[in-house]
Image 1 (spheres, rainbow, N blue to C red):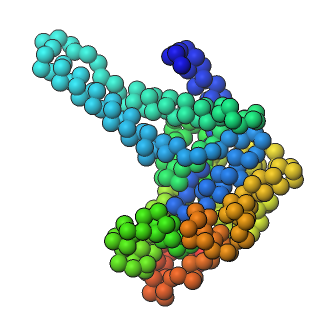
Image 2 (cartoon, helix red, strand yellow):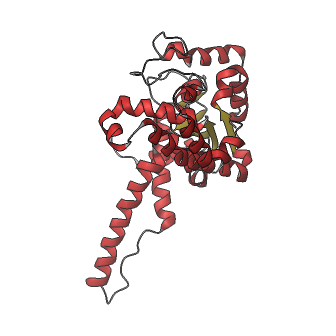
Image 3 (cartoon, one colour):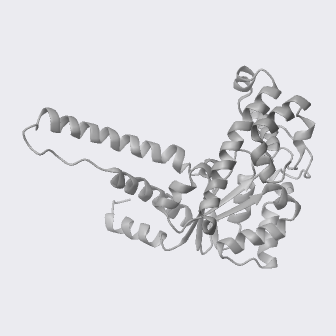
Length: 299
């Protein structure tokens, strides 16, 4: 494809006229499930993980910093008697990475394999929850959705996820399941706290959704999310979205609660942590994460 600067600039401008949103949450909070539910809406594209704050932005900043260092060296050692060439400042660097994100979101929404008229474009990466401030600085009208799940369930689910993905690393890194479960308390608190503090400061751009509420009353919670995003929530749309996100569909036919430790969708039920936490691990987790467990009614 030939490079067309004007066409790409127009593409970015068109994207910024659409409603954007970002989904985040602590690992194993249900962000993938929420993404699937949202993506099935006829006016929404929310598909895959872009990892903008953790992969894309640092690499863009690093590349430009390296360029600036090279220019500074040239200015200092070769052209010391002349004014030298200007370097790219913080605003220029932010323009680079924000433009890269915009082009990625535009490509996501115009995927030819997806036959629907997209009006809202959302991106889900769990780590977004720690960067809502940064993302809304670049995209001021973007909405942010944080999904919150009991940190003890996140920890239990994370243990089995890590055993499935990298059993050797997990066994070498953690002496026991208890050690892993307790180690997750600080990370869970940091993630939940970061998203919640953003919500406290920018309530008009923020919605918190509890995994447990979405599981218990999916029609009500999904309607609340669609209302926040400004799209229709007809019974037909809700039914289609919930069918796409049903545990039975995602797990290949298992019922919710039927465990398969080899699957990304292992069990799909709230409260499973009680089967795996010892009394001591539970006490230590609450000691570390009690503030946020209480705020979201888990204690």
